[in-house]
Each structure stands twice: as structure tokens, then as C-alpha cells.
Length: 276
Ligand code: C2E
Ligand code: CA
Ligand code: CA
Ligand code: CA
Image: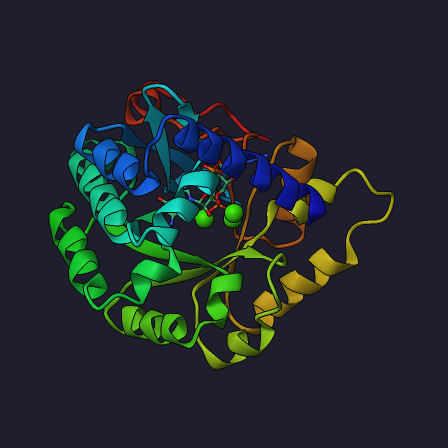
């Protein structure tokens, strides 16, 4: 956690330093970035642990700033939230997805899941339902299922859980992200139904490096099963990790072992290798 906080601090610091040096306001930079088309999306395949076939993608945002270079989402999402700009940014993200959707449809099977990260600041806004419905309407009919991801930390906000219930009622799927890293949301897991539990890559990372396998990971898998939640393991980087996860009943996996996040163009050229 300390390391993570430090890394985050550095990224955040770089952007802050750059913005101060150049007399810019972060809000204006984000807005002009939207206008000038500096934001783009990458897609990371998610595979079914049973047959290792791609069943969906997670959508991840990128910012290519003309002078600061590639700014990672962990840095700019927080800026956008602090500046009340998460709404225009996510609306822009939805437009990018809608634009890619016809080509994505040719690359993914029917029923494919589109995992989209949602910041709590946007969820709490009254326009959120309108925005998500509009995205839904702009996708090819019946091909995709939208999975909205929020982090365990953000689940502690009452407005968020209420909104998630509403979303499920309207047919969207929901996922709790980075599970195991936030303040424990265990109590909420019992109160609110979510479809997927995404196991943070910190747990996956530990597989194969310790002589005994992780008792915490075992417990998380048992918990998810009892709660009737489907599990997604994130950050799978080696075939050993993939094998362990499959043997322990994880439902879906994503990570560099399968593929890095790709632009639509890279995804079009990507041929999934025979995984083992
Ligand atoms: P996340 O939702 O947990 O996304 C997974 C992160 O893990 C991504 O980082 C992805 O590139 C990285 N990753 C995937 N497989 C591996 C692996 O095998 N090993 C390692 N070491 N890393 C892997 P990314 O793209 O930098 O995104 C960071 C975070 O920023 C995301 O974490 C998410 O919380 C947030 N984010 C990204 N895009 C959006 C967005 O459009 N909206 C919002 N609100 N947040 C976003
Ligand atoms: Ca996510
Ligand atoms: Ca995650
Ligand atoms: Ca994360």
C-alpha cells in the first residue's frame, strides 16, 4: 500500500509539476484534451477460464498529452474527479466506445462483455443514467453486455450502491473491482447483489512465488462462490498463475499473459495464441 501510494504520488506529482510550470489549469487541460482528441481507449481481452476463449474486454482510458506525453489513468482520473470533470470525460469515453463498437462487434462473440470503469463522482450525478442509456442505445443491438466496474473503496458510498442496484434492475451487469485492496466492503457484499468480483492483481501476483498458496485468495474464492458471484482474476502474467486459478475455479482471467490492453487497430491484428 505504501509503494502504491508512493507511485501514485509520483505520477500525480509529475502532472502537477508540469501543470504548474506551464501555468496551466488542470481542468482546462482536460477539457482541451477532450476537444483535441487526446484521449483514446485500449481494450484488454478477458478470457473464460474453462476454454480460454475471449469473452469480452475491459475498456481502459489513455491520455496522450502533446507535451507531457502519455499520462496514466490513475493520475488523470483523480484530477478529473477533483475538478468536477469526470462527467464530460466519461461522456467522451462513451462516445469513443460507441464509435468503436461496430468494429468491436466483428472481433467479439455475441454476448461479449464490455467492462467499463466508473468513477463514483459520475455515478452520483443525476445525469448518469441518461448517459449510460445513451451508450447502451448506441451499441449494436443485443451484441454486448455492459459490465460497470467500481472499486471496493467506492462501494462504501451509499449513493454508489443505490445506483448500482438501479443499474442491475435495468439489465446492466456490475462488478466490484480491485477486491481485497480497499477498506473491506464485506458488509455491502451481503447487502447488495453484484455480478462479478474482480480479484486484485496483488493476490494473483503472489501465486507461484510463495511455497504455500495464498490462504486469503482461497478464502476470497470461497466467499465469492457462497455469494453466487462470478470471479475475474486480474493481472495474470504467467501460465503457472493461469493454471492455479483454473484449478481453483476462477471463472474469468485477464492479464499480460493473455494480452496487454490494445488499441482497436492492434486488437484487429491480434491473433490469440493457444494458451495453456
Ligand atoms: P483497473 O480497473 O484495476 O484496471 C486494470 C489495470 O491493470 C490497468 O491499468 C491494466 O493495464 C493493468 N493490467 C492489466 N493486466 C495486467 C498484468 O498482467 N500485469 C500488470 N502489472 N498490470 C496489468 P491502467 O490501464 O493503467 O488503469 C489503471 C486504473 O485506472 C484502472 O485500474 C482503473 O481504476 C482506472 N481507469 C482506467 N480507465 C478508466 C476509465 O475509463 N474510467 C475510470 N473511471 N477509471 C479508469
Ligand atoms: Ca477495472
Ligand atoms: Ca482492478
Ligand atoms: Ca485499479
